[in-house]
Image (tube, rainbow over all chains, first blue to last red; front, side, top):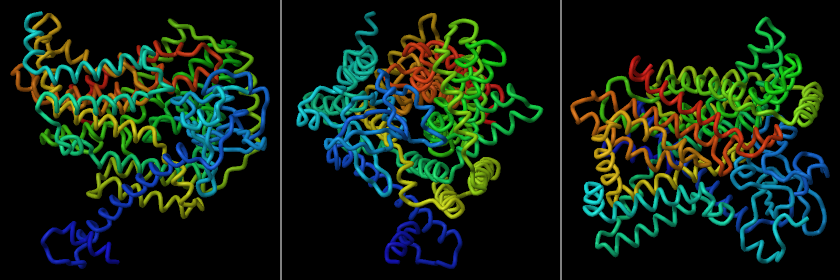
Length: 153
Length: 456
């Protein structure tokens, strides 16, 4: 409530707080939305840093899709064959083999697939965010720690 | 030549800024800066740092306020709001509902060609804040319909025509998006000059019509000029797999409702133009979809794709640095000099509007945000030259915006075209040229629409 009053005060400048006016209430709502979106953006950026720099686990991409498909090991290009797996979703499921040889399904954004040129065999970091397991290309530090070449199956 | 040297000598720091900026862009595109080591956004951030150091050495330190004041929060918050809407729609199953509606449409008198026409334009109809959202969500439908069309007409090239038409449409769709699209920044810039008719959404229709033409031209050039043939076995296998999958899935009524509410809301925003910021409308829309589709907050956060946001911020930051050290003054002086050659102002404007597609970045927001102040200043210079009216500013801005928005399609640095190429089993980068042809023609069409009809 304090934040709402503060935002209301900020949005109305020097005018006394008059919550009876609809425009004032709208100003408060707009300010809350604006600040809320910025906070979500900051949270998303921090989460991104966490998934890149401090992933919970490190693994390698084994195949694209909900099922482990060893045919996928032949693909040598990012973006390849994602149509089979996207099923109306804006993220792509990927099978990742973790360091203890277990296989998990993680989600990766289409931007990461193309812009980061993710391919089968790439070293990736996986982090649980809410009910999703998010995948990001592992940072150079992790590659150095793992001491293996990328795409080394 | 002497005049160019004079312009450079007059502001050596600004000239160096321009040189570094274009140098980094070209070096990234040519592969001289390996993208897996230093992505273009990071390279531009380092360039900003370098420019800041150079500015100190030249005795004109960059004020941090100059850079931060160039980071416009409204488009960024609208973009975040747009991603939340996309996340809510995805979680509610609205994209699968859209595929289902397309399938049903193909059984109506519209038939398969009519459905394909709707499908390839679907990204612009949805107008998501990033084209990759629908490129990932609807590519199964594009492959499926492309495969069926190719089978029925006994011409495998039709699969490429449908897929790449859809891809270029998706790439450009972030231009007219009311959910934090690139166009919003241009509308804000032109709106600051109080040009009649310019406001939120005033560039959208011109861009949407231009995108339809970009799509058509790209499809035609693939079919008749570039002849991009898909790997038939791959397309057939994927098409059949999709047919089986689609038949098995059941879509809940809330998915259709979410889709309906989304379209109604976006249409209402454009028609009624309510005096409420778009961010508030988006958040209300998200809440409504969450309630209808039983969507969790984690689903929404999962919808936020950081690459376009980071691309936009890196573009704003480098633009702030270039503005601060006077690089845009140098650019305008150089362009004014060029305008005195047979190119004239029109030739210079055409060149500048097409720069994003000539130097295609993986996200159009990078070069879009970085050069938009320069394009705006060029528009003002042209309007002040006495030859052109003030309308030249929105004309130039809308052309540049649509070109920048679509430029992530043909980008060799992980452009959306790669999604189509990967799925069709074609050579990587093969779809770049037909897309560029389409984009360049669409850029001119967007300019004509704004020039002749005004902001419609």
